[in-house]
Length: 366
Ligand SMILES: NC(=O)c1ccc[n+]([C@@H]2O[C@H](COP(=O)([O-])OP(=O)(O)OC[C@H]3O[C@@H](n4cnc5c(N)ncnc54)[C@H](O)[C@@H]3O)[C@@H](O)[C@H]2O)c1
Image 1 (tube, rainbow, N blue to C red):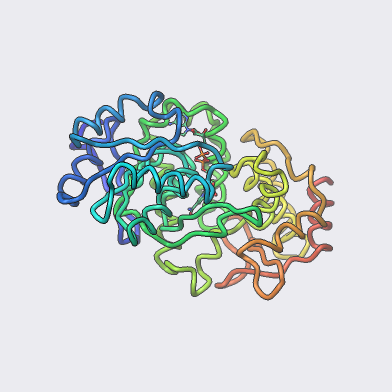
Image 2 (cartoon, helix red, strand yellow):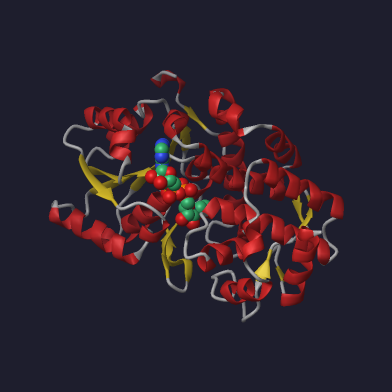
């Protein structure tokens, strides 16, 4: 794909999302023309400077003098401590109000670097260059940034949209199969909440084929970005309740992540959460049983382990209580009415009790 083939994905979002080439040509060009007076700094997850060496070299040649700051990787390091380290590294190198952060990495990095951009020198612009499927289709879209704390996921953060998002599928050529699967969890969620045909197409596409076919990757990224973009644009700051839809699977999913002390990764926990919550929706009479079976089969055929087996309804409920999705002490979730649509109008949520989680678990095991 050459520079001329860089395309803007059609979305309802104000900030552009581009499909970029293997050399991030669009990224360098955009920064030079949109932020001529800013000092760009590349913030990248440890290890990726080598793995994505040619993309980094290309950025360096497009943006002479580009400084690089390497952060610790992983969910554990999406933390206040790592944010502080990053801020100190920026200050040590003399960065100030004219900084522009280029965040290159997975969703943990775009969340951390985006949050840092939102507070550094009272807020500086940033550009997201996600390097995992999950971050391309979800984490880098929608302006939510933040870090985890012992009480729960993403509890400290802010809305700070990147000036632009550059999804370059070429960066995914080094992504291990496990990480492709992680991203598919969020794509499955997008299909479940908004597009039954998309869900069906993903359920039928083996990861091996997806890893090989660039056209398919671009299509999938564009559809997911469009779905998320439409929902985000209708409720950018999560005030009307429309955006809750994106939390499908995340009530149980975040609880599982937290209970596992981040040993269960985000995508795997979301996949488990989607199944468990679909089973709860079925137990509460929202979702037909046949559709639950279809969801559980699609998730299992994509290779997700049934990590929901490892946690009891009681501990999941207790952990979910600390989540930011709670209102007035009640634990809320997003029940599906069918594959491709939620059961309820905005705010889309329904309380979930111990008995519902237990009934859901029985359905899943049966
Ligand atoms: N802000 C949001 O709206 C939002 C939405 C969904 C998820 N998230 C967050 O996203 C995070 C998960 O993101 P993730 O799954 O990308 O995890 P991650 O950032 O930990 O990346 C996963 C792994 O892939 C490696 N990696 C990244 N790019 C690579 C590449 N091109 N080649 C080889 N290896 C590569 C990373 O170094 C890491 O080891 C979670 O913290 C979740 O809460 C945020």
